[in-house]
Image (cartoon, rainbow, N blue to C red; front, side, top):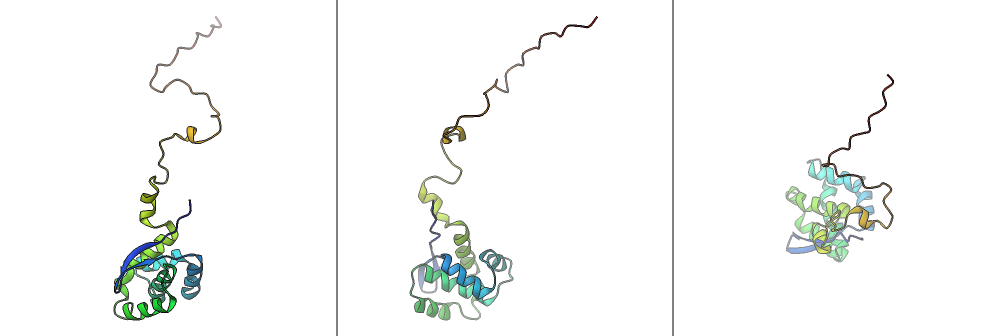
Length: 150
């Protein structure tokens, strides 16, 4: 299953779509000299840099469908000095969605990962390799008495 990792979040003048596709992730990596997980850790652990916040927001807006010039104007207006730390939660969510998928995507599919009505044996097209034995709660059979050497 392909996961779009797009979600809607509050930023600036309202709610906007955010998404980091491969192109945006590569640009973020170049601009921050770090991969997405490292940027995520820096933001969540309080070691963030200005570009970690501003560029994740800008590229998330761009990947979410906003025109690049409008995304830049939004960042200049709403992610200016003095307000950067207030965007940590949103930036973390944008990065997490890019790495793991958006939170509402599991619900939309109707089945969460690993959840199924069928057993692994039923899901697989191959036969089981072991015989099914007695249930673990049943009594053991006594073994035949070994002949004594006397």
